[in-house]
Image: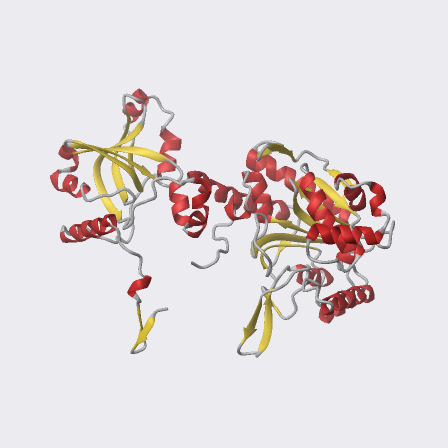
Amino acid sequence: MPEKTDGKEKTNPAEELKKTDQDISREEKLLRLAEAGVELFPRRADRTHSVFEAVRQFAALPPEELDQRKVDVVVPGRILSIRKMGRATFATISDSRAKVQIYLRKEEVGPEAYDLWSLMDIGDLVSVGGSLFKTRTGELTVHVRSWTFLAKCLHPLPEKWHGLQDVELRYRRRYLDLIMSPEVGETFRLRSRMIAEIRRFFDSRGYVEVETPMMQPIPGGALARPFKTFHNALGIDLYLRIAPELYLKRLIVGGMEKVYEINRNFRNEGISSEHNPEFTMLEFYEAYSDYHDMMNLTEELLHTLCLTLLQAEEFPYGEERISFRKPFARLKYKEAIVGHSGLAPERFINRAEVMAFAAELGGEGLPLSHAKALDLIFDKLVKPRIIQPTFITHIPKEISPLAKASSEDPDETDRFELIVAGMEIANAFSELSDPQEQRRRFEQQAEEKKQGVEESHWVDLDYVQALEYGLPPTGGEGIGIDRLTMLLADRKSIREVILFPLLRPK
């Protein structure tokens, strides 16, 4: 830890990064630039094009047309390579989306500017001005007439990534990941475009985008363990939200018939290829609809996103090809377990045997109920076998405390989970609107919490009171933005689609 001297923190030298010879050399070059009167940290930089824009607009032009048009550009970028050839130098600069070659001649930039270029290193940021041409090999190149120093890279860039052994470094220093791997930046641009398209989709259908509290006195809307904090001024415990659901349904009670929120949620749970404690969800609710309407809307949304972002109805995901053509398959929960678990149907008749098998499968002791045992079997054996988009319906009431009971079976609910490529992408139901039934469900969850089930739902009497003012028939749904990005970007880990995933401090 830093030491404190006279109220000021004193850095412990042992904690400082050890400097390599290259680090020292780069620092010395920075001092020489300063001595030459170069502004080390300029306030702005002029440009006519980014590297990506220059390449996109001019790379396809024939050399003769490029020469005839006499295209002048001012392009900033990061140096990725330098090749000195006597009184001339070739280099490559990049904006992490595209690369372009630059060509400097001592006679054209001037002796002083050319000599200063010798103080440049791979990783430095510069801006070059000149005309575009193509070399004999057809490479788009900037014939530099002037250049400006923008920033010094004081550490050498990694030469290349070596697969999984560098994966944590990639997440911990995402800026290096973006510099070295253009496809990483494209994943996050896809994510950004996807969120923009989602907004357009719901706005065009009369939905209102809203914001709900991220700090809540009672965490609700999902079965998850919350993060806890304390508000000093009010002297109360607060919890980071695990879902915005109960607040969004309060708005439906208040007469806002169609609402949606793209929200950050926080769940104090483990980390895996599909789970990060901080994640993004889309939640939307529509009055006078049910879970069948939510299925239709979900099909339309995902089909639209696929066509808009990928210009196709299907796309690769690992070794599979996923199709978002409508309609998606529909399968009842118990039928999915019997058909996809690999277990003989007669094994599900004996409830005690199901619970014992689930205990063995989960390795965490005997489940508290038959429904929880089925859910464990579903997660472990069934979900990984469902590749194409499938709505799993009629989920047990015991694990669906906020959903309406099914008219076909009172032990089931009008709820679905959308499974794609073995992942739960969406969860929706016809919302429970009976305040007394909701209170009974909350109390049942409270009993489970007393028995040690930390992920049970809390009792929220204020929400029950809101229901007493009348919640119309309502369909509601949550869609995981991170997992949906994983699908469309063909990424196998949620850490690949979150810019700064949670990591253990070094």
